[in-house]
Length: 164
Image 1 (tube, rainbow, N blue to C red):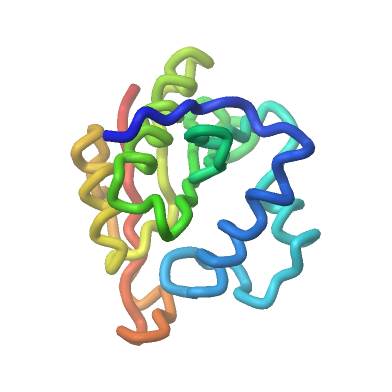
Image 2: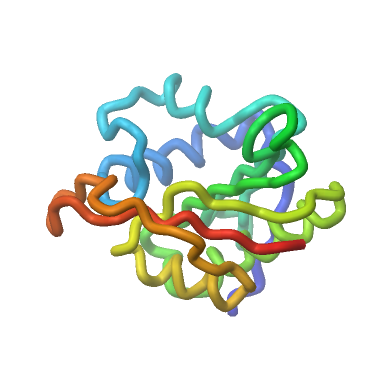
């Protein structure tokens, strides 16, 4: 695994995070975000106010990926966390996503969350599913045909959970 530093997102980071978000969302094969969204729309979705927490993974000053985490739902559901991860294409398969997921799980434990739930993991995103399973998540359900994949057509979205 790479020696990446994970640090809190700073206001000056968006210019380097946006190309990663644009690449991933534009591929339309893992996220349910509109592939045509603007940088401003993406920032509003990705950089949420507290109690959410946004971080970047860096190596030698280069941003390799980003994650956001916080309560999955407000009110009576706020004791369960959620997180989302994006890793640049040239950094995939090198441990950055695993490091970001570990960070999110540790953050959620420190914040006192009871568990972490992912609401929409595309079943064709097998590398992410493997990482999540390796880190303690289980698939608790799959919504069949809930995601319109550009190559595979309609595929399922997994709901995954890890008790903390």
